[in-house]
Image (cartoon, rainbow, N blue to C red; front, side):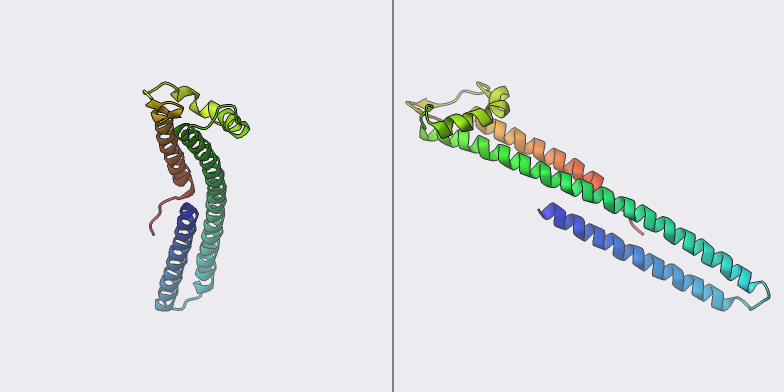
Length: 170
């Protein structure tokens, strides 16, 4: 959830920078207008400058709205991704714990966890030797699966962060 907070802070920072730049531009135009002598063409020049600023402001709002919409979609996708990976971590963790404690394979809960974890653990079965003492097993292969899924999770989240946060300086 800290990524969402970082996204909100980043968006607030970007909005503050945008407002500061806009205020600075407005002050520069006002200063320039005060320094120019008043002539008959002054109203035309003022109308031209104000039209340029209005057009730029509209364009900035459109771009900012698109960026905010993209960031929202990426943030929601990141939340869903987190949820799915947390479920996978939980199921794999239960599988490791059941094997470590020697849970009976005939138990309904154990069979349910085996069913859920099977698609995620199948590529890792027998990857590494698993120490065994009677019914108790320490599944090093499953622990390796947990680490690999964690790395995959972090990589995908970094991609979401790249989409959601656009680094800009004004």
